[in-house]
Length: 180
Image 1: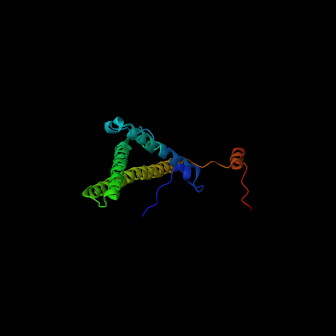
Image 2 (image 1 turned 180 degrees about the horizontal axis):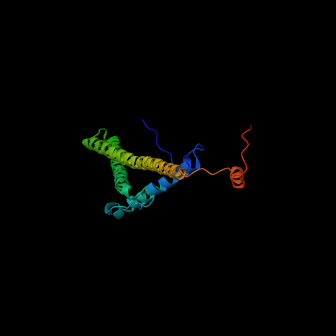
Image 3 (image 1 turned 60 degrees about the horizontal axis):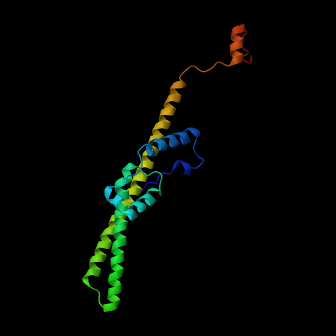
């Protein structure tokens, strides 16, 4: 299993300045400029869901508009879970009064299981999108670093500088002392 890429702020000090700069630039390119998550109409209509959406959106400054669907699914699922749990508590209180569980209890449990799967899926999708972006930023940083290396290599193809003492000797036409 591959390692999860790190944010530029989490990088250790073993990187050269070029490597660090490339990673930070790539991270900025990949993570910025995609807008912020948008609520769908269903979430906007219910104040509790709207509040939950804003709370989840604040968990990460790197959620972009691409994450909107997953955040909306997560908000709706969490809200539905709260409603189903309330119903379950009422059924359980009823059960204590009458002494037997009815079919309603089982139906609510099945709904809760399905909702919990939806919540897990949305959470995984949000996490995957973040990891995918970090990996893309890492790959972009490697490309940027290679481009810098190529530019440096092409810049080094020029003739090397002449030793100033040798240049002066050549101008004065003084023979070199080869140690003989």
